[in-house]
Length: 279
Ligand SMILES: *[C@@H]1O[C@H](CO)[C@@H](O)[C@H](O)[C@H]1NC(C)=O
Image 1 (cartoon, rainbow, N blue to C red):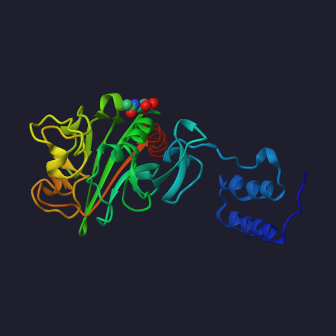
Image 2: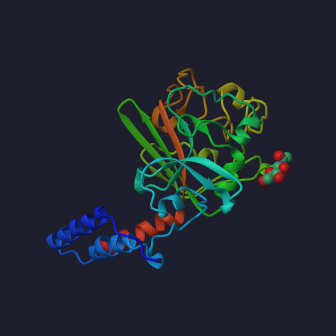
Image 3: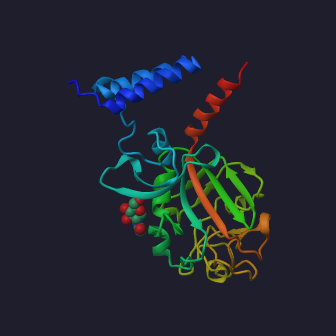
């Protein structure tokens, strides 16, 4: 079926033609002429389709053409009856990151019981923890990488881990990480292979209750080198939002985001980059 062209569309096409003549860009031909034409005439076979109708993570949301960071709906394992609102970071290092934890103002209490850490709490547009059960489900969909972004005053730092997986409830959400890169120093590998603890569920390797002592839920080992769910703004030793190798144990970091991205997305990007940089 052929729809009527609007005057606006025709004007757009004319403008595109002019641009094309100016730039003589071959690649632009499809983008600038064919696409507006097919859109104008509503020619279904050439109309752009959403690639992933039920995106399972922010990588698929990005592949759907979304370029702005914000809160979007995903469907873990493509399960359309279980939508989940998540925060996507489309700006950092190529985008496609699903943010699963954020600290930025201390407005949300992170000193909470196991049940809360399991299902998640807070607001994905503000401070939140996505939940251990969703983290297990998300990180089991494919191979994921992890990024931790830290900001304090005027300075920023990041830590990157080439693999990220959180085990199921039967493992107490055991943390698995791949090799580290970044300029924040590595304060998480110490927690690799460790299970999660909360104040009311002490699974750590210490004689004391680390979660109770240090005011958060974490993959505590013999307590911690990082405590990103610690008490916001608390500068007493080990209790605050700490990343030891960047700011030590007595500095509570004012902005933190933890985020994950499918490794495949980075592979795609690297391939493209290699192709473009080859002589
Ligand atoms: C563990 O998680 C599964 C889903 O992954 C759920 O069906 C089960 O009830 C949970 N078990 C406990 C003890 O919470």
